[in-house]
Amino acid sequence: MSVHIGQTQEITLAHQPHLAWYRSGRCVSEAHCAEIAFHEDRVWFRNSQQPETVLTFELPVWATFVAAAKAGALEAPPTGQL
Image (cartoon, rainbow, N blue to C red; front, side, top):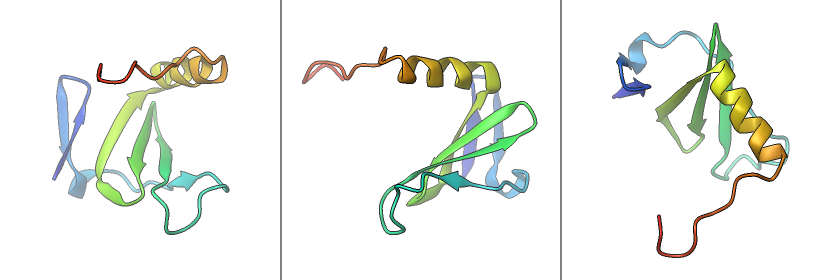
C-alpha cells in the first residue's frame, strides 16, 4: 500500500512516521470514523475502518478546510453531480 501526498510525493505505509491518531468522542468504536494525526507540517487523515488508506494535507490547507467547514461554506453537490 502507498500514500499519495499531493501530486508529487508517494510514501509507503511501512515508512510512515509513528502517528498518534485522534477521533471525535462522538464516534462509537464500531463506526466508520474519521481519524486525524499531526506530524511536522502535515495533517494525516484516514477512515478508521480502512487505516491503510491515508490522505495528507499541509497545515495551511487543512486550516482553510476547517475554517470553510465551520463557516458552512461546504455544500454537497446536487444529486448526480459527483
